[in-house]
Length: 171
Image (tube, rainbow, N blue to C red; front, side, top):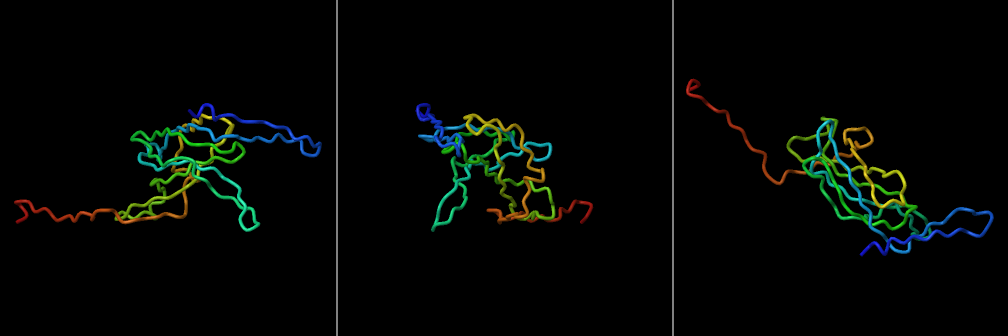
């Protein structure tokens, strides 16, 4: 099982100039992330969530930063709760939740005839060497979970047409 692969090695550098402790993970290990999504004071159900790590890479001689998806995609349940497992590759990398949600506080950005959503990142803070993260409540209406980039796609069905109902007295 993955319990044997949770080994981490802490090696001190010998030079006096660099007395930092370098943390190296020999094998990736499993972590558990749980919490609850809220939209205002209500539970936010069907919020698409996955975990990502910020990684450094070299490409054509330049160093850059990017994101590595470290879990499958999950949906929050009817009560807004989520609980899933992910893989951790390095403890010194920042860990984020990648959140796709429909809790858009600015009603002018919505289109009733389309399915509108936005994508944001939530940084997981605390001891990044931990294997269990309880994020408690995340209120998606807060400013830092709102994005200027709202994407709207057509619904997979046609919007129903409403006809005027005529009663016996209206004839």
